[in-house]
Length: 525
Image (cartoon, rainbow, N blue to C red; front, top):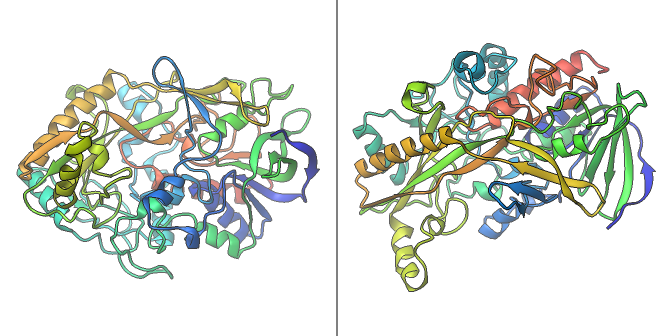
């Protein structure tokens, strides 16, 4: 489908590309201050009434948008790396594990000689963590969570301990490892017009009840209340700039009918996660011959994921593994400290007892691909009552060779797709070997009758348009403002210079709140 003749829309104060965690927060704060805001979302409309507690619906939230060429091994494969193209983006189905980065996470390069440093410290970000925590609501136990950096107390009591968590905690206790309720942006009590969690494990389906803080239930709702508009099925193709390239004038996008539009705005916000580098690459002009704000060639470099493994167990007792939340009920960060003497350089944490369904991301069927045919049915019946697991979330060292480039393949509008090159190194494999051994020991100590581990896999996407103090080695400053075009703001995970060893969404909100308040204080950009 080729785009038809171009239409120019009414000028707005800000156009935001992407309706996920970062885009929704920017929209809410700008609209609150009276700015006229339009959000362009490449995917379909999915609001709370559209969400259904089913695995089929959950799967539909994970994929969509433009394909990408993924170079993990040779040969390259074509896949979809968007991980969610709909209202709310990837955060529509995120699991709401909201951790603060540790102080050491901000100084990877200066402390250990590898990766990158953040241009800010924990002290810079702490006030924004505290404010987001109050606005959204986080359940946890800051006293039990002894590794937690300094901050205000959580706003709700921690998650309950269902049987699976109690059994796994036995293993951690026997190994001398401390545990605490996992901090989550999920209501453990009715709060701010949202109900308490049912603990039926359907976070992956977008939380149809609204207990989980995704964009639909918090910041998009606030943005709409203050007049922000959301256009679905609006795929942004490029950022438009003045002839000298010093300012952005808006964006170009194609709607569901193939009609090409221009949305002019004073501020352009790129919050499109994996699509942000692609949009910048495709915004070629004589002033930006390598793409928008890419004179230094840094756009697309340092993409990051979290190395991950699951350690599974079957128990003699019934685990009631269906109860709880998709991310788990407890956490242990006793081995989080970075120390090259361990044989790897990385932080990591354990998440205990994620709610498990027969299928899906945490499904027990997928944990044993070696069991099939006639053997699968009796094993599934046993696992349905006796299965649980722990998950390791680990750190990846930032490397420039892990990157996004433009592919030789093009989309239906004739624009190059993304090509992603990603590889784990010996460092991540050493982390996996260590964590796999420790994890099996923990689950065995919890009295599991059978224990097995997953391969090294990954989750979460970060990097590609990293923030930094030096304009020659980063794409944006600490507020997400691109070094070359001062009225283009990047928001979201792509700004992360390092991955740390914790889930990213809380930090995404904190850096975005800090950034949008800076933009408002210096308006017009």
